[in-house]
Image (cartoon, rainbow, N blue to C red; front, top):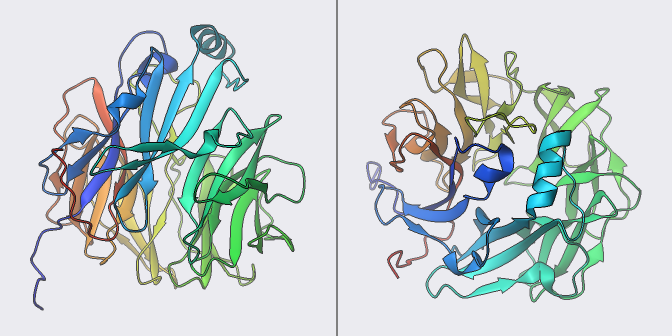
Length: 378
């Protein structure tokens, strides 16, 4: 087929940070910087460095606009006092005055940024910004309200923020169906599906105490999520009305979090969640195979494939598939440092696209959609 052997030309958004600074989690989180790089490993640059206006401020690359021209960047700040309290008590304390986390849209060509969650502000801690499918004037995000995370929507300019939750509880993993008419989230670790205004919420009955990060298939017919026990949960799927639950695969004892620091981390790393193939016929995920965490693929019928074969102790994490389904981007420690790699969808011909040194890490990669032609060396 014409173009079959062409390498991907998209940008990859990701985050770099230090991993070994003394002082615990916060000292290393403060070094996070949102970056982009071409899929061939060239043109690496930091995104929106102007957002780093003071000490203890960091940025994270969190996604893209549908046309690939804007990056979704979270910018955080935490006080030294609050960071010390969290380290001592081994838990988060995201109170106003101690924490601030906002979601920005950043034009990759001009660098112009807009802080959407500061407009008609409802929370000091906002995350998970996404463009609402099939509605160019609507966005979704999550806001921490009185200690509870809530699913919210707002207009494209940040106005008219609306709480979509219908009951109390900590909600997370908020997303909308491809046609924009349904939403999914987990609340108190139970998955709920609802109309786009949050009404008619239905709990997905799994029989399991831990259910995490529901994700719509690209064709909108399925919702995939992790289900089981905390630190022992596995890819499951249900139809868009919440019925027909099936277990897709087993993660082989993998706890489902990837450590991204080389110093003790009281939060024990970053969640390592599956992603759909663009044709909606399967899911990519990570699982423990002998002494390594490997890249895996499973069909809706439960047929599994191991896409990487690694030396003991190697980890793979955060896989994402390109829009054409031919390439996979992921993080891996196979070279001794947490780097972003690109490979064919079957895991072959893998190559590093970052070149960090020991004591640094590249995390949370995501493909640029829309094949926008952007100048990364602005």
